[in-house]
Picture 1: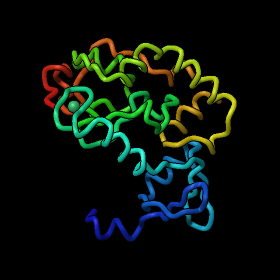
Picture 2: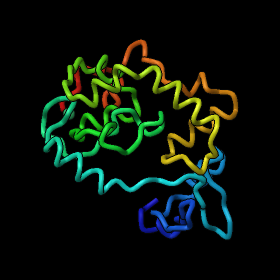
Picture 3: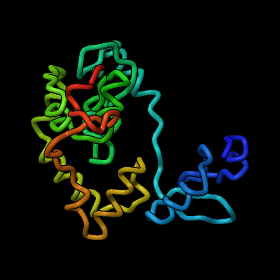
Picture 4: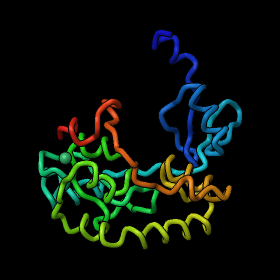
Length: 198
Ligand SMILES: [Zn+2]
């Protein structure tokens, strides 16, 4: 279906505070409802969580680190949460670094230890080193925190998805495990490392 036609069917979306967000397709709205991430009223999809704005912390991290990717040391212009938001990582100076788009997108919500296994990178950045050292306890803390707080405190779709899994007793499935044989997201037929070009 052409985009112009599609856009006629877009569903208005608001966040937890009623602020308008980018409209989404009916399919996406349905998926959100099915996953328990949103409610629908008067044709408006209302998210049960609140996506976060990053502008202020982005400037602070960029001023601290410059435009260098903390993972591959290439040119990095995006803000990367070392411990992903969905695993309790916060948008704070002690959890954020600059990353190039390739590293940021390829890692997605993978844990730093898994990403390093795939890429073979050896980052020196103190924030990455700290998170790596404490990854296990940070995950346990994330689980305890998710159990205690309402979905309304989740800051991203992925975190809200893990919240739902956690509260349905499916924590084991939600918890990240290193893939036995990691493959590229872009070339599913090839191992990640061979095709990863930052
Ligand atoms: Zn990079």
